[in-house]
Length: 91
Image 1 (cartoon, rainbow, N blue to C red):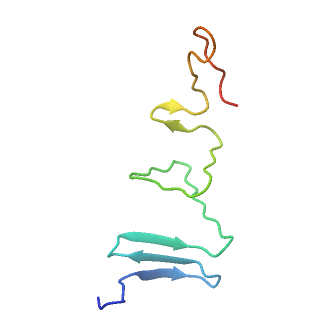
Image 2 (cartoon, rainbow, N blue to C red):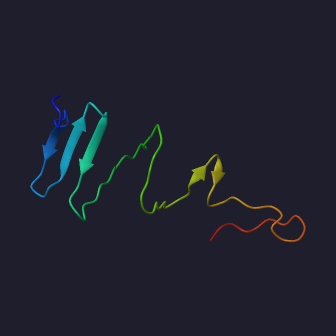
């Protein structure tokens, strides 16, 4: 492409400014939403993500978060009190 141009192609656009585009140069699929817009994935069978995930903001889970095989909801910390007692579950 000539300087200042891009192969980014708009796949779909909407009256409120929402846009779906793909750039084969950067291999980036992009969903742009107007201010206040939300995005939902409804997948009763689950969602699989391969690769790093970067999040700006808060991540909320209605059930549990498992990191490295350790439950964020049910893990315990040994030796937090005198002796070998374990802490309670996180509240």
